[in-house]
Length: 268
Ligand SMILES: [Zn+2]
Image 1 (cartoon, rainbow, N blue to C red):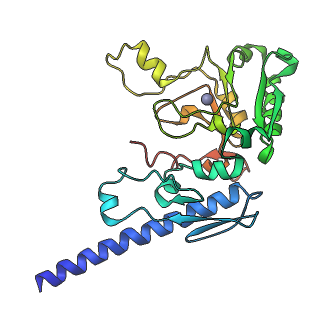
Image 2 (image 1 turned 45 degrees about the vertical axis):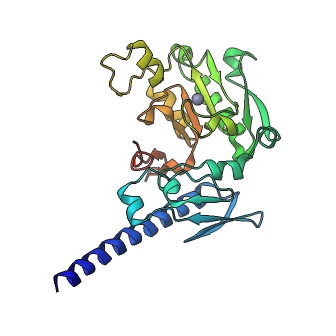
């Protein structure tokens, strides 16, 4: 009798874990479809159907033991698929490769030059950004909005760090958003990057707490166009912005609000 009860409890727990996962995954998939309507035709429990007629498998790498030892094997590197764990951790490299291009030459086909705040800086800062999802136009709108701020803000917007650059995130094995032409860095002088702060602290008594001098007005202007600020990350990078509409929800006043339930779930 005791054995049976134990087995029943175990079965119930496994069922709970799986139903939680599939429910969570459905939310992630709908969030993606809403965010990328130009590319995604439809989503179902185990696939993403693209408008070009191809599809992605949603691979379940979670298991009862996988949940107990989560993080050991979740990075899914298979082509034309994404794992449930990557979906839940907002780790979208395979999706971005599909949307923006899976190699430097594929991404480059869509890159255009946008001059950053040209009425203030002239042609000093040419940015290379993708035209996919109108990202070049969004940055132009952001640039025009920022030019309207009082001139005292401009020091945070010069010494621009960069835009398109095919590379991995430092010390990680996945591509930075810069690789897809969907990201830019504003002032390298006023920006704080956790690794630089760690070096400055000479590895003594460093705690990973946000250090920031970028004004909220600047962050708001980027976020209203769906650009995620790198200061939102535990491993902060306050000069960095990348186009991640799936990380925002629209509030009653129709303004985009960062959903802080997302992105933080898988911080290790
Ligand atoms: Zn960056």
